[in-house]
Length: 522
Image 1 (cartoon, rainbow, N blue to C red):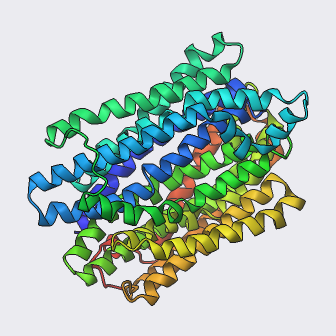
Image 2 (image 1 turned 45 degrees about the horizontal axis):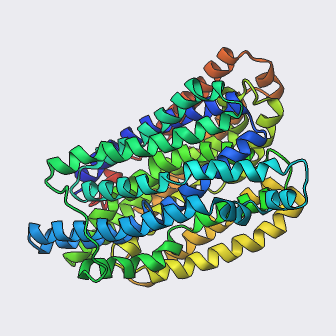
């Protein structure tokens, strides 16, 4: 079990690394093209809405509800019933998403008014900034169909993940990044409004992702004809699980939308600064947190179905140890190296030194919550694998309400940075509640060696952070370096910091066996 999880985790992380690197290249191209001005704000807004719904209807709530049920069908029912379930789910979900997509395209102005209310008021009052509302609505018409494509992509990925075929789904996002980069380079420069070219890239990328999955489903003989079947027993169970999960698994996304809503009232650039800092946060989050969560969900579901409670607890404990092993040093490094990373990656073209400074402040705030974001991703499957969606919803409501209150508290004195602070705190609250619930419910017991492992991880991470602070040049010096010199210096610091972290762990006595599922050694 341990080797299988490690191998699967490595596969997903490797594929995700390729996607995340291309994602950074994509953001570098966008920063060069549009910087952090109004055009960038509008594109990021139009891209965020379908991505939020993607988390609801595709990768988030749907996957958490679908994978446990499909796993049960795979283990207990004949292949014909498995295919019938897939046909019913794809037809029912597909019909619903098709209707939503059509409504979203036709009602793009209403959606823009709802989530970009500050722009709507400018349009309503005839302000010279009224064009923002009009253009945002037009961009949303182009990007919204991405929801349709990515829903079926996520469905295919969930099926393949359940079969242990993790590489395909993990690699698929690469095509979205390639499409956006291509449109940014070859289409946007020829348009009066370059953000339209980026929106076209989102549409094309979604379509390619969808088409890429089809041959792999055909190979597994699971490419079936979708059928509407609202009353199919499997569909009933999935939608029963999914309805509360729509909220529970997407709390962080709802918080980000609230940030966007408030940011539309703040100074121009606020949405972009939050976006660029969030993109750097998403790199380690996707590489480690989401990858580990993706791998353990089928395993947890299988243990629950087989009533192997001890294996269930050990798998969850392994997930937490791995997230802390990778996430804690990443969190400290992200905070210490925030401004250098933003400068090296994005400061060119329209993205200037002021944008670096502004985005770095929100990255410090977001970065403080990185480990919490990761833990939420890993702890939530502990509930969904047992087909319990109500408990994380309850915790999600508490976290979201706290975020709304904290937004008001911190946004007034700190502006857009306050929004990032509120998001990080609410994520920490959410992770704490999820952890407490699993312990209190008796389904999760921390292995006896985990506390010593976590203590050594924290000590090694702090040592690494101290060395990075000591050897990192001053912010003034960073600004004086050429791009090549800054990139070289940053690479040395990152590699050196990672080396110091692993050496410190070795000196502190941490070994490979501490990260095996069945390990009970101290």
